[in-house]
Amino acid sequence: MAEMMKATIFVEPGRVEVEEKAIPNIGPNDALMRITTTTICGTDVHILKGEYPVESGLTIGHEPVGVIEKLGANVQGYQEGQRVIAGAICPSFSSYACQDGCSSQDGGHHGHGYKPMGGWRFGNTINGAQAEYLLVPDAQANLAPVPDGLTDEQVLMCPDIMSTGFAGAESANIKIGDIVAVFAQGPIGLCATAGARLRGAGMIIVVDGVDARLDMARQMGADIALDFNKVDVVEEILKITGGRGVDASIEALGLQSTFEAALRVLKPGGTLSSLGVYSEDLSIPLGAFCAGLGDHKIVTSLCPGGKERMRRLMNIIAHDRIDLGPLVTHRYALEDIVEAYDLFSHQRDGVLKVAITT
Image: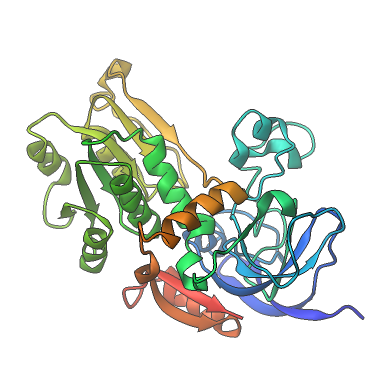
């Protein structure tokens, strides 16, 4: 009889449940991680609502913090009992996409042909992290030791939202002194704001409609916080920039309205860095796009993964360049995760991120 664990599974659109599942058996290149803390991501809410399809019965979640329980025979340089994280994107580093320098798109795991987002396996194509145990594939490429002195909650943002938000700032090609606008200040947008500050932005303008998020954005480095309920943000940003437009805009929500606003405030030659997960077709307005002659760059990013990316992010935290601890607003035990999903998906009680402990 296999040993059992608690796991959060996707049942059908609108329903996730905590069920008993067998603890995974690992292969020679894998590791078994005992999860100590995880969290719920906006993408998990897309899964819950049926907006992003996964198989019924799949364990969901992709933000693991924990301890190595067991190592596959081929995995070198780690010890059982060591505290580790793994990125939400866990690339193999053996696929064509990985070896061509785009590890998050690790397209080697879908048989014939290329599929985008191939590096996102946890809670997508394999069982995920909202459980007591997690199988980490290609463990040597993906396990990142947690520096001494850092708590689970301090590193909880590294696997996904910190890596994604920072990628938004990195892809935006921010130079020292640039003016940057960040649309939406959910967890990803807040990390993009923090990333823009670390990249040397001279002024950061953020947009949201929730006062608590605008306050948190100031804490993360925003200079000007605009409430889209109170002002025409496109008009206001063009006024703030003296009509020049921003050097870079970061879209962190995934709606037509935010994407379009991000394009309308962009200077000729500027970069629109898109992080949103879009659930329907976008249309690009002709005027904002300068009929295709504006020297604009529109760049998309998926969360970079792998142990080196995780090491770098934890290094930033370890040396006090950033504190993402305040983003954890609520705490639940794994057995109460359905209640946490209800809170998080309805955005009640000022929730930003929920720490789930096992």
